[in-house]
Length: 88
Image (cartoon, rainbow, N blue to C red; front, side):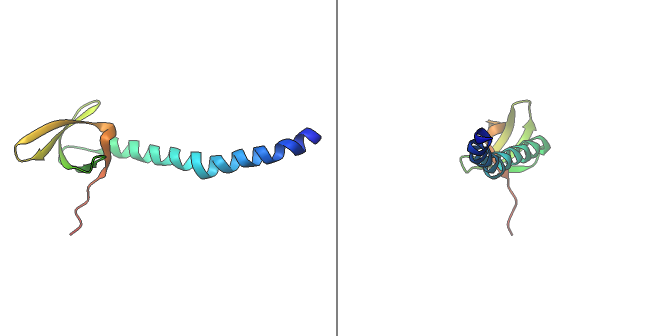
């Protein structure tokens, strides 16, 4: 019985850490992965570097993106921070 009373605070702290830190991060990562899988040609995204680009082609691990009228490039999918929504 003494062992249970000594371990109870540690179990309580681990449970709090799970529900406050670990679980929300897992849910956020799942939402980000779903957003990446839903992106299609023509979508505008914001990269983790702050660039706003338009997707021209979806590949397995990369996006072919258009930076401006005459510059194209490849972007790693993990570098997409969020989908860009025009705020007009």
